[in-house]
Length: 484
Image (cartoon, rainbow, N blue to C red; front, side, top):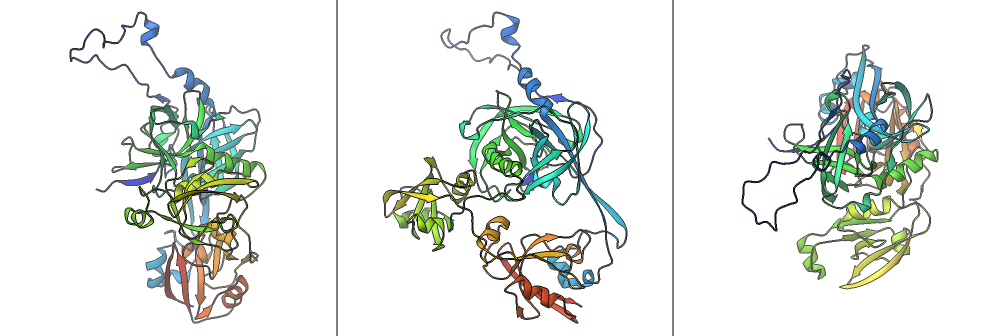
């Protein structure tokens, strides 16, 4: 079986066993090989020198770690579009529920309280598509929570406890200060057995091409992480959050010592947006398309090694163009921090607050130059003009917006600058049953080109014997026909 990346949330809601398991490193038995007296370690002279323990760190960090229970109750309406075999081929069975019968979707993960007012950070995939969230604290209290902000691009979400105050919190550390080999603890609720602590080291930093989120820049650890750990903290030896555990690389679905955590410096930007009342996270816009540098490209550019991010295309009105960057330039650093690939550039810019400037290290024609780039958000031109579609069309229940640089950035639209983008899906709607997804781009309906939300609203409001739909998803374009 090929190893795969797996999210580490627990798919089915399990009963809490109230069991806390702590995995603590123990001293290894002495090696049998002979060593010289000079190379031999000092013999411990007291019991205290032998009984090293992570207990002080755990006692400080553990009260702020929580279990996250999320659910959604939905009623599946009768939907004639589900009978179309071609649409099922592209969109699946739309949830598999029986028409008219209520279904309950549930998930279980972990989280960490980062503010005394009750702000909880977890993974977006733990609460994705859910409407009801309950938090179980380490002291066994269960408190309802509301979702303040979802950020699919980073796979992070911020929740707010709706009852109580003065909650235990965990301090946020600095993920840029981590080094490979640093000791770490992973705390969460694997497989629903109860709060569990595991120990390991930072195995690698700046892991990219992981495929978990748009900002593929992860801390790798060998601390045991399993399903249910999603959203729980990766903790340093000062009992500070340095990452949010998110996924594992595994053949079996269990831990094999390769886990990935979102760096806490990205968490800080999402948390700041939630505290400011934002529903989305606005980040600096580069205004350029970046490409990974292969060995062949490096040789063609005269680079010593294939590192950096190649500017393949530039928006003439974007910040990169204003900073004097050109197509063919290679970005190798952001504010003095190395950028080995496009994911690194995206992460470094994504953690910067809006306003001010960033210093980009750039290679051009074999020479190093420095560019100062404004940190501004992507523009919403044209305006979104959001419309919720109604009627009996396949799009009923979907909210669509006009495409713009801001929408492209926010929803990770790939491969097209035309059409309108699906931004929301109403629960139980025809659009949901057909498995339309946030970020889908509608390009044409019944051979009519869709250039604005008004165009699609007009077409979807009319009657039709069939619906010929051309859409784009993940950069791939396809056309299908659905009976009316």
